[in-house]
Length: 420
Image 1 (cartoon, rainbow, N blue to C red):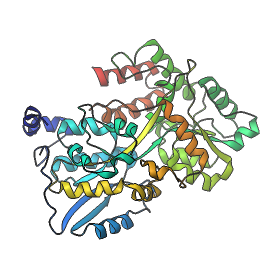
Image 2: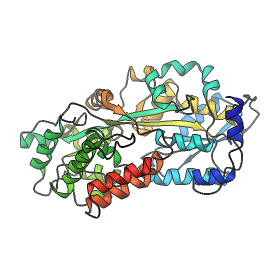
Image 3: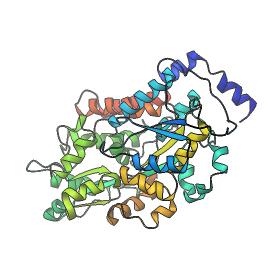
């Protein structure tokens, strides 16, 4: 880190932090690169995590780590996810109050904001001495690298979103799984009947993952002017009209979240939805061979887009226990520990060694994930992305589906959010 950058981060004042975080300021200034102190007896590391299934617990991994690292106690705190809103509201509030954990699970769409706040500790120096670094594919490291070139995130798990479809309903209708937008529309219309809807649309928090394949895949971009080009506006009109005109979304779509789309699909109320391998075991438990998956449909020009779903761990700059925190988060991303961790989360291991003998998900869903990597992407590394995901997208999507604003007004709101 240069002297200029260090001075800038240390000088990040209370007013600027208030603007970035929403209220208040960190109790401690950005600490810069730390000198890796020796770990004293009974160091306590607070770690925040979230699992979709609240019955799952990392207790066995914590016990294994503490046995291998005497003198370090891990306090693992389960924080409700709430579509991301609950988790990040509490995380930012804790950072503001100076009561943040030492480390926590984090996603890429919040990295730029956290970096700009000076809330994250760069991991580059620590990673140089971590022998297991090479077991994580370089493309995953690249996706997680911040725009300033530093590595603040230690990859933990990943997924790629694909299209779930009810094999039984498709077979009954004599329809093949869709590969193009046109295929998708035809299938959704044919399957919308007798109380079944063609597509289980997630209009609540997290639903940008349903919108992205059709609108970003259809030509919209986050570059200046990219949300209001003719191609982008046309793609969004087509997508919104799947609900307002074609009526292939359930009436509950404007507010449906993760649980609603999954339960509706399992119950046969919808014939298709979009999620990832993390829900595949639940799907198979309920439906057996009646469920399968393919990559999301592609646009007429052959282009496509789907979300690379990430989860990493980060260390906060205000932590007094950075070396101990790194030992913990690196433990979670190492070989069999990472495989065990993803047994709780239902996502894919970031380790090459772990994927060599992967048994946690049926092969057809792992294959759909791997085939989707060719069109996988991430949302912009911008401080504005977090608010886009949490509030701007769901609010405007809901209003558009309810007819309160037009699809074009929705896209102009997105353009304004990112570019003024």
